Length: 336
Image (cartoon, rainbow, N blue to C red):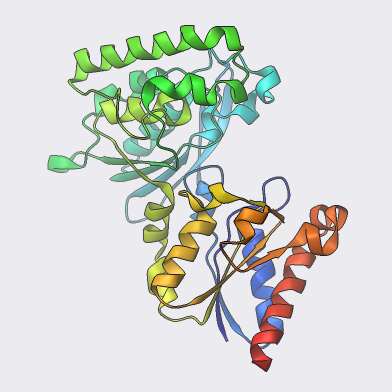
């Protein structure tokens, strides 16, 4: 058997690369070949999917403190920036420690600017895990001098990888509560976003107010779009950059996975995207997941670690449980 290991992370347990390694170890132990291709959808883990950081820059965190943030620059001029490394909720201790009204995307702008100064021609920006609702104004202030960011006439191209369709003015209403915004402040932040959109329209001639996905990362996607950056499907873009379709032509089985499988997994996420591409190439696909809802498991062949091994083992021995499931499936295929 020729196997492709193409999982997302298991949040709080294993990175996508660690899951891919567990799948590959199991496949090789069964005499199969395996290509490891850990993936992401533009959220946290995007940088790791490309091999991790090989550059570090000191930037402003959401709260105004200085932090060292990793990013990546490859020899072909492609840079990868993960906004969570500079403007992420984890940097301020989660929603409880976040001042969502003052949290700034300035650090993300600094990371992108650092990449451009070091010669990046294309920058992929992952948007997951943000602490911010500033409409990208902090990043825009750092990047305005580099605009337009559309790749035209020798200008750099910035691709904003996201997996939501939320419009700019809805960013506070949809995402604010998970960032610590009090319910009584949602309307004020929404009004602020509308004002920022009007300012972008006046200054840059770009109307971000109805742009699908413009509200991602508290409006950072819209802010970057005002400078010419292009919001794109996170999974589709990352899969194309990493050559998923080329690998699919050479394998018999794809094994993907994530921490929690539910209907949302098929809406711009890794598992749904891998399943779609595998079916296009007539390749069997299996999802090995931490836990699965009934609705999610009905849409794809699934091994649910919690259901099979119990919650304790699924969390503490995740890699071993993944290996066991892969060995079982490859054994079944050998007998068929």
